[in-house]
Image (cartoon, rainbow over all chains, first blue to last red; front, side, top):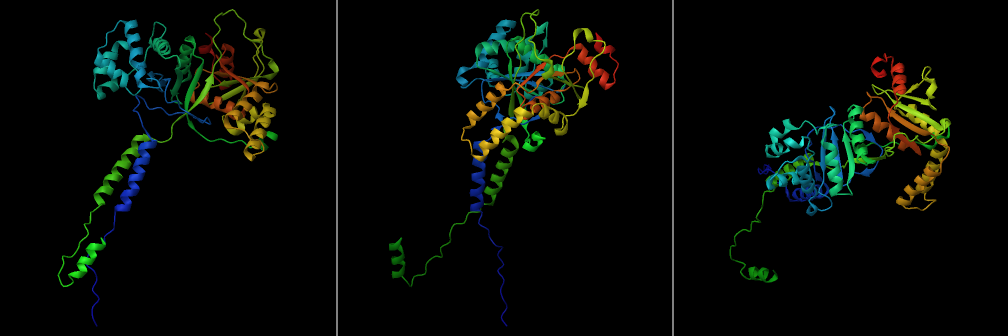
Length: 211
Length: 219
């Protein structure tokens, strides 16, 4: 009886369709996603049923950590050509008599995440490297003697009148810290706020109401 | 192509080199793709966070101006207490009556707690809005999403039976409580609610309910 010869070669799988699939997934991810910006503090957002997406531009963000430290961020507006951030920094520099050079201004203009340093330390902060920056952020001063947050709000609204206030805070933050920020905003005649939340679906049925 | 095939047929005797299709090994490319996808998955946030809008009443510039009068029978005070506790009491407190403060009722943030209470108080409006939305869902009323929102807010403006909810936060409440209670307002379709500063006697009421001595809050 003749022996059956088994093929010694390992079976070869054509990987081309797999490459195609991965390419499609990759392109999909690239187009639909936004890079997650690193944030100076991690916040655990509370849940709500609201479905309004966070606005892409014209918003000033107050990031409040669970210790009550406040970080401030404002965007460049609809088009980066508006250079709102640079103008706001110029106004702040004039107010506090600090000179920033062009390089520092550029850095500030492109800085993606909220900043939480007093304006006096902002120069050092911008010149420091990423690892050193972490330790410097202690929150923006907002007590009545040195209310820098109010100044940031004032100049942001002067440069970009359409700016809306967005508050992002940890759900464990003690309420007085939030209230302080709300009060400063209200002193600057900002009465509408967006609170950043994660989506949680809740439904109530009719029977529950009709009881 | 056809020409080439014919030419080959013509020279049938000739030995021709075996045609080997160039085969490219795609495995490294797959590896690379996997790596890139994993990287993008980890660094991106697919779902954008949502925002909840809230409008606070404008601060009165003139301190002496009297606050607007609201009917006590429709007023519902919600006090956000420490340790995720929540209390409520109806009506208001008379200025002369500070010695015997009204009792507060404790409830919780669950669907059976504060939501049941609010829905009960607001049942007329809530039913109206819910029935309207049901009809839209079933296709009985054809309406765009924008006008649905407008119609709901119009219903809220016209309503004069629902409660007027005043939300007050104790100093030891946290931000999560604040968002939770505002969320309940949206869920229950409360037409009139506002957030205000807690009065000293209300702090005392919460402290009494929690079972704390009131020395710290009295000053």
